[in-house]
Image 1 (cartoon, rainbow, N blue to C red):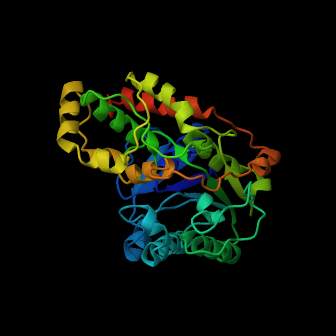
Image 2: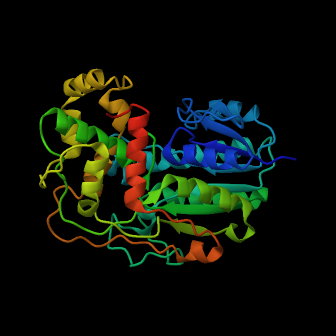
Image 3: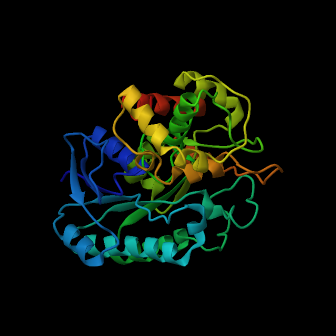
Length: 359
């Protein structure tokens, strides 16, 4: 029997990449999300409309699925404004209920072998206290309000009861092609650069204090989902994911300006979220002038403009505790993929230009 994977949240950043990784290796892939994914066009990928927040509708959608052996769960519910919602009880409970709705329904008519669950480095408590450096998967849980623990505890109990395996992945600052999502920086940077150029201004770095950061190319995350589903050593384990190096935004900024063919400028502290959202008429002029896909700013940036302010340390002038995670565990387990972070970021900017999302 051919393995069949259900990618939940397939219109999002990781969901799209995971679907591509599995389909490339000949798996039968069902891409599930509320809206049809824009970036998935492959003979081995089918689409299933699914609303995880509606328990009855989710159950009805799952009842039509047969032969599902694996799940990659990448769906997430975020409140407007992004960061403030991370500790909000409504957001936490909604995300917990979404996973329960899916797994309870899918196991009614399918015999699962493995589930991959996505978390992130918020699991290490950076929002409430300085992280241990580096953050390792073996460190004790940092108790704080977030939906990771709600989902993880349910998954562990559910997997034991229904006799399937699972793996938890914790990627750091994912970078990829999707626009209109909650946390992806290339579309925001591309729009910001285009608006600056339209105003006759250079591409100024808008952030605060310089610091070393980690990121991960979404292709690596997608491939890690495939690896976790096919390697026994990954069963019941949690793994951090990064490109394998650190970077600085100011060091990367000249390459970004060169890729987007805009003039590099001196630093100028500003909120990218405010700057972008205040310029819809100007953006529509840019769309017309460059014959771009007819997207509004909201359709391109989603909630990622708020994420940009966070990642660029907008308004931060004093040193902050570093956020570094160790990827030794997954490398020693045999998954050793790496990416050059600067080349990765510029690759996805070029991808957005090729697809006429940005000029």
